[in-house]
Each structure stands twice: as structure tokens, then as C-alpha cells.
Amino acid sequence: MPQADAITTDRSRAALLALSADMAAEGAMLIQRVLPAAPDAYRQWEHYPEGDAIDPDSRARWFYHAHPPEQRAEGEHGHFHVFLPLSAFDGVEPLFLPKKEDAVKVVHVAGLNFDCDGLPTSWMTVNQWVTDEYVMPAEAIIDRLDHLVLDRAGEKAGMEKVGQWLTLALRSCRIDIAAILRERDARLAAIDPRDTDHEILSARRFSLD
Image (cartoon, rainbow, N blue to C red):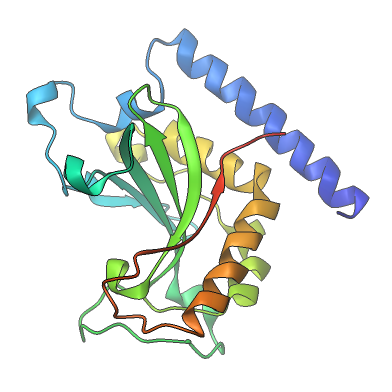
């Protein structure tokens, strides 16, 4: 890693740890800020927040949801999905187009799994059928990672710190994000993007080491 990139990554990690400490001091960790206050109000498959959290400046977005227990990894609670807007890829030819004509114009960057203690466990990429998105080449997404800003996403719902945390996490783990995107492209070269037998295409443990 070039020295400048290493310094940026170190600063992002320090800022991520500081933000996590601030959130803990406020008495509400990341997942607590996303889910309904009443436990019985939480619904599988629902997007939290409703309508997704969209940054008004970058137009990047995130949402959190959970699959039914039989479709989760052991100990998994749910996961975030993070997207860049299609408009960030002007002039780039998609690898695959959405199936729906009215599909949301987004490009999936990565998912981040969380366990039942509210801690991040792993990054992942998914097959196209999971998100029905515009699949862009890995290198095009990697080139735009530094512009993936979610700092104001969810601010109307009081969730802007979640977006800030995700922005710092993506920057802190940039090497791992790039790796799983390249692995995703290698898998997509060998499988059908609509094949439901293939869901998770690549993954890396969440680590700040």
C-alpha cells in the first residue's frame, strides 16, 4: 500500500474507533440506532430505515435488514447493504443489467454482517439476483471508493452517525473491499448472475488490523 493510502487508512481507523466510543458513551451502539425501539416491531426482510438512508450530497445509500433464521449464518443478526448511485458511473459499461425495468439505479458495493451482540463480523459481495442492481466492474467501483460518502445518510431519521460509521469502516477496510470485489468478478465470469444457487460470491472477515 502506498504511504499516503496507509496514512489515510490509519486515520480512518482511528476516527472509526473514536466514533464507536462516542456512540457507546451515548448509550446506543450502531444496530440500536437502526432498529425499532420496541423489539417486537422488528421485521425480517424489512429495510431499516424505511426507504433506505440516502446521502443528499453523494446519493450513496445504505439499509439494514435480516433474513429468516434458517437463511442466516450461525450467530448472525443481520447485515447492511451499501450502494453507490448509478450516476457515479457515467461512461462505464455495466457487466449486467437489472431484471426489472423500474429497478433502483444503484450499484452494490458490499454488505457488512453483524452478529447478535451487535458487532461487525464480515464483508461480503452478493450475486446480482439478490439486489437486482447494475453490476459494474470491480475496478470501476474500487476507483470510486474514496467518493463513497454516507455522512448525511439517514440524518432525517437521526441515523447520520450510522452513515458516518459505515463511511469510516469502508475506508478502514479498503483493501478487503477491493479484494472481495475482484473475487466477485472472477466468480461472475463463471456463473449465471441470476442463479439462486449462488448468493454470497466473496467474503472477508471484518478486521481493523
